[in-house]
Length: 120
Image 1 (cartoon, rainbow, N blue to C red):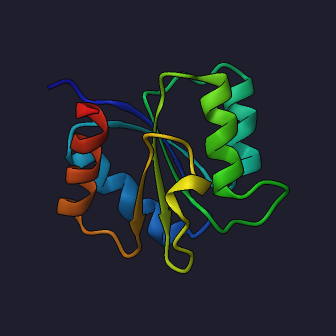
Image 2: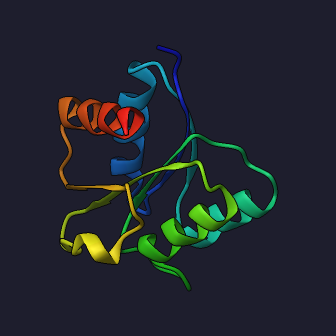
């Protein structure tokens, strides 16, 4: 199975680096953004991706859930994985067919979530 082009959005540098390395080890290509606002600039600038992985709580005008809905509008076929170490959103409050994982996220949980999204 070919690797995905992933847009990873996480404001905590060490968490973002760890996730990026894990995703690259799984064979994916990763573009990183430190906020939802920065991710929106990439999306509006034509950044193409198969999967958005975003934290919920970030500084700026958008949180990760708002970013996920915006990404769905801009890229209707994108897969969405939402992460949080604090919030546990109700499934009705996140985009349909997206997956939520609580942080910290193990490599095996990340791999399983991505496989689940691809199979849907």
